[in-house]
Each structure stands twice: as C-alpha cells, then as structure tokens.
Amino acid sequence: MTIPPWHYAAAESNRRMFSRIAHRYDLLNRVMTFGLDGAWRQAAAALAAPTGCRLALDMATGTGELAFALASRAEQVVAVDISPQMLAIARAKARGRPGAGRIQFLLADGLRLPFAADTFDCIATGFALRNVVDLGVALAEMHRVVRPGGRVVCLELTRSPSRLLASLHALCLAGPIPALGRWLAGDADAYRFLSTSLSRFPDAQQLAKTMRDRGFRRVGYRLDCLGPIALHVAIK
Image (tube, rainbow, N blue to C red; front, top):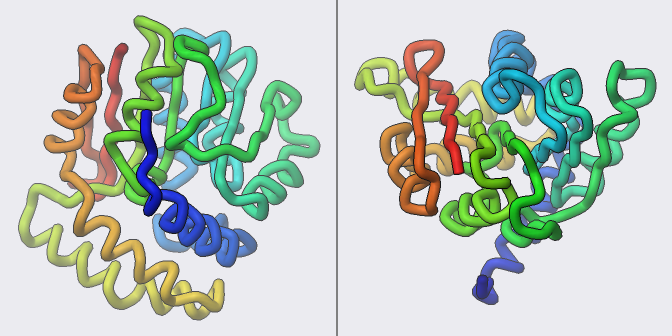
C-alpha cells in the first residue's frame, strides 16, 4: 500500500506529542476515566480472545496496559507503538508483571506493520484509532495481518447518541481535560487534541461501516457509559 508523503510528517508529530506526555499518561487516564480505563481494557482483551489466543497483537500499545490484559489470555503478545518513550515505560512496568514474559514490545508504525499477512490470531487496540494519520490504512493493515477467522477489537472514545450527553462530553474535553493535562503533565495542547480528534472521528456506526469497507465480514459494537466508550469487534 502506498503511503503519501504527508503521512511521515503527521506521524512524527504524533510521536513527539505522545512522547511528551508518556511520563504522566497512565495517571491522566486514571483521573479522566475515574479509574475505569483498566476495566475497559480488560473487556477489550476478553472480546479479542474469549477462549484464548495463540498470538495476539496490541496495535499502538502506549504504556502497555492492554498488552498486559491480553497476556492473561494469549500464549504470546506482540505490542507495537511509534513512541520509544511509551515503550520504555511499558517495558519498565513489565518487570514482575504476571505474564509479562509472553509480551514482546516493538517500535513500529501501525500504518506500516512489519508483519506478514495472516500472522495474528487476534488484534486489539485501545484509544489509538483516533490518533492514526489514516484510519482506513490502519484498519487495512490490521485486516492484512490477522488470520482468516481472527478477531480485531477496537476500544475507543465515541460521540454519545444522546445530544445532551454528547454536549456534556464535548464541554469536558474542551475545558477540564486540557486543564488536567496542563496540571498533571504540563501539556494542555496534547489533551486539547482529544477534543479535536474526537470531533473528526467517525461515530460508532460509521466506524463499523468503515471496518466493513476494509474487508471485515462481521462487525458489531457496544456502547458503554451511555456512549462515550465504544467496543467494536470485527471478524476477518
């Protein structure tokens, strides 16, 4: 698949942004989600490998929390990210974690996954698709590297179907969340990006359609917390 030249500059911008906030990424996730982000990742791992999995991929692993959840269900996990700083934290956290010996952390771009076709039995990604430079390419890459019959699970923020709740969520993303980013991570701009990335990201129904358009034959989703969180499950 041909990658346009602008991809590289945009991907580098994303890498720099996430590298800046890596040291406070976990703390901010806990605060912003009232501690629910861990349960959401466990749910994503359970959907990706409901009866176990030989080889799993965590695409855009960040600090590794979803990879650790997958490791309790998969024989082996490969976790990739574009930020060396995020991966360094993930590797440090892995010391002494149950099942961490089954995880391999690799520096890689989700739009150019360095794996052969039909490699993985399941794939999961958490809070990452909003941030990729090209959603269609990212989904096509996941479709390429998962085996036929394999599952792809996407955990992501989404816009609530309720106009009132959607407005409340937008207000939080525009005001309190950047303020928390400034206070806890010293970087309001990175967390202001949450609002802009969500506003241009497909809603849950549209994302399901995009996944079908990229070749997945069965796609479903569920909304948690009245809409701000969506879990999509797709079968190749």
